[in-house]
Image (tube, rainbow, N blue to C red):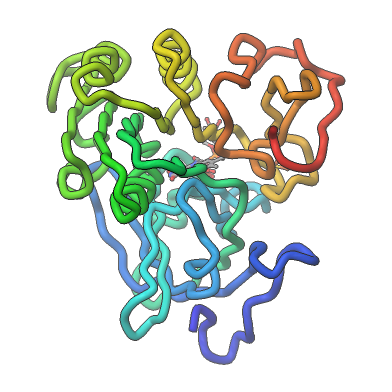
Length: 300
Ligand SMILES: Cc1cc2nc3c(=O)[nH]c(=O)nc-3n(C[C@H](O)[C@H](O)[C@H](O)COP(=O)(O)OP(=O)(O)OC[C@H]3O[C@@H](n4cnc5c(N)ncnc54)[C@H](O)[C@@H]3O)c2cc1C
Ligand code: FES
């Protein structure tokens, strides 16, 4: 059970979707420090059963200055063992909310809503997939790598960060992929530089047919440009600032070229995974698209 005994059943968070997000009061099963990051394994069978790679959960925090939940990518799920279903989330402590969560230990409870958003679409035919992660952006890509491998796709990983301790879980990465390459800006681990310095060579040597990326916006824009040059399909998971996390407040909009024209799409609802070639990268963080309608539905 994901719910702590006596705290009731998980409750649907949006109406009308049986596979939609639920809210659960969940027990922390394990805490682990991985380099600069903190990983929580949370007992949440109802969320584990619904989740797909690229989706996220929002966690309530205490003493975080604001009552807003904080969004975190799902790094992995397990549906085995006595707990029937757990999810992993990885935290980089950047403020009061992440500090509070990183202070949780085994048997503490956390209030979780998920899975939220739209995950990574998987190739229909066997494909060679290059997964590019920056910092904790590598976290959802490990979950994706496991699922791609399980379905018979080839997976190559390229993870970068400022320093070696901010490369997320290199050991697990090596287990999940046919090849791995790491870059750090200070040269303390792997090749000195950025992921985009080595991406063209790796895409050529592996014969990449699709790129999946998650990380800071600047990195995603650069990866998207390289994918476009090589005419490779590219899906990016954007980590925009979020308010409600469920498509109501429009805090998280991203300028996007839909088939029917330009629109602001909500990273929490139509995303966080978006087609890189449709994101209007040059308008992100500007008011260029302000006033464009925010529309319901998928981001096609
Ligand atoms: C879809 C999604 C997935 C995410 N996955 C992860 C994850 O796997 N691991 C992880 O550590 N963090 C992740 N984040 C970012 C995380 O939600 C924020 O770092 C967190 O909410 C900060 O809360 P805080 O109270 O600690 O800090 P705050 O005081 O709220 O913020 C501290 C600093 O972090 C910046 N910040 C806040 N939210 C974001 C954001 N969404 N993107 C970039 N910068 C932000 C603020 O601008 C500020 O400079 C994700 C965000 C999104 C939208
Ligand atoms: S965070 Fe409210 S609409 Fe996306």
